[in-house]
Length: 222
Image 1 (spheres, rainbow, N blue to C red):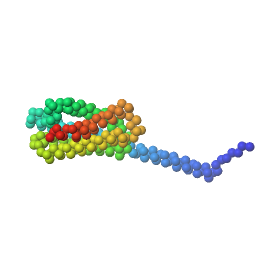
Image 2 (image 1 turned 30 degrees about the vertical axis):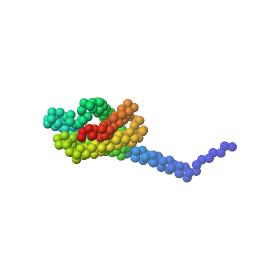
Image 3 (image 1 turned 135 degrees about the vertical axis):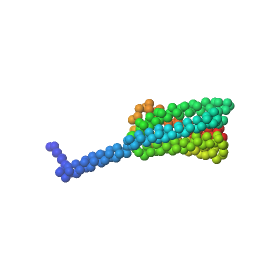
Image 4 (image 1 turned 180 degrees about the vertical axis):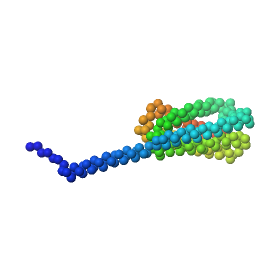
């Protein structure tokens, strides 16, 4: 004969309580995951750092070039000996690197805007904090260069080198964070075209600052 086994009322009550507890835990975990998302904080952080502070940096470049043009009729002094005819090949390499970094900034910005709302706040802080560090240290570059051109001194020169080393380091941390600190599931939610171009643009920008600006340029400026 067939034997039917059914849960006794106490067992059934326990099963119901366990199921409810699991459901409640799942809801709480989902709520915590949603709370961790940066949301509008992430978007605002990217806009303020990438665009707001970035505009301040560009303003220092404009001021420096305008100042040198007014006083000397040219701003080629900023190239140092890289501008010499004997270093024409290096100058052209520099041009290519600058263009790649400049163009690369825009898909890098687009990628940051796409992932920032979905990232945990701590990841947004890492990305935007390191890029803010790059911008803040880089704000001193042009004023120090103009001061050095007007009155060369070892103190200013080594201050420029330290500043470029700091900026380059912040740039590398920023690139590392964009490439390795972003969860794969969030990165994969972005279109492959924007994701790849954004990461390549980030690399182009960071490597230019760390290699061309912080390493190759300084000895030629002295």
